[in-house]
Image (cartoon, rainbow, N blue to C red; front, top):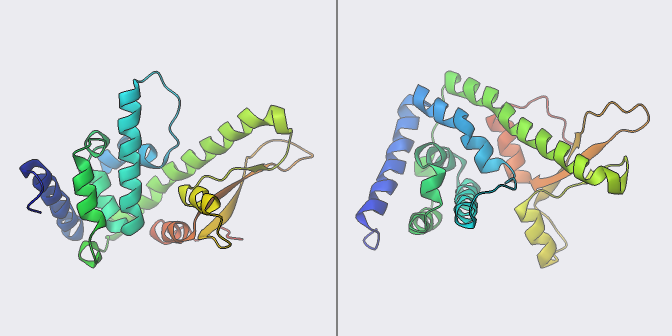
Length: 217
């Protein structure tokens, strides 16, 4: 890490220290407050149009991308970074070197940890945030397209991997399709939204959040 600045090295040290704390203490009360304070919905949620400056929007986009790229290589490290590093820091151009350091690791086993029963219970409860984000996306998609398409199933590819695969034109995919009902009170029509996601991300979420009642088709 000789090419990194003292500040960047300090941030990497904080991330490593956070992993160590998660291994020994799990999620502390402060960690849980950070997780509840819209951190998860920021990372996984769809950006909404706002009156923010273009610079702020750009930084938020960079922050989401950084979190997402770390999540792909290690869920354990992602949890540590999501707690330790705020979006304002992830959105800085200086964080790019830290991201490169993380993504260039040959092995991520050193970051793995087991969560205790209390932490697992907290994460299962907080998994509802993800479900709320999905429900909001479904509702928003249906409202914006219903006038054009009428009452019908709404195909909504919501995965960067799926978009990338479509552009590459391959014959295989690493995604699966989740069919989510819109919970409309229509007597004659069953409306739903199709969301394509990385199959590994889905299965890891099922395991991490103990979503044993999830029907996979």
